Image 1 (cartoon, rainbow, N blue to C red):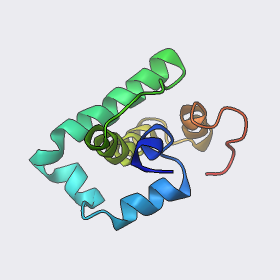
Image 2: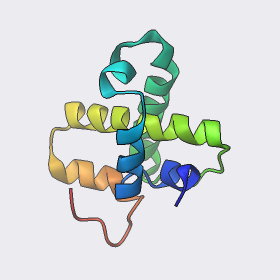
Image 3: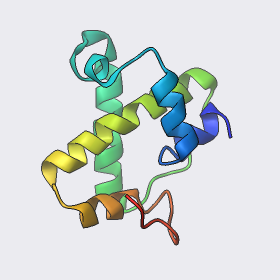
Image 4: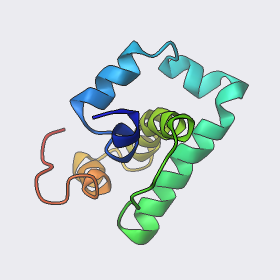
Length: 104
């Protein structure tokens, strides 16, 4: 898998490893003004999942894919803050793994 695959399925170990190797940390994503658009993307993905019940598969270039992947931790934070319930987080993630996701 590559960055474009990870952007559409950010719940994989490969995506997690990619984020760990990144020079951009969670603190940077949450605080620095330069990452405001990534925070907005994370919010938009949560709203999309709540409204539509599914995430759309998107075609990305490498830059857009990296932005989408960096938005994933922000989305997780938002979902955890709003709901704070593991079952709802799993429901939110289920579009990524519609039949086999049970392991957060």
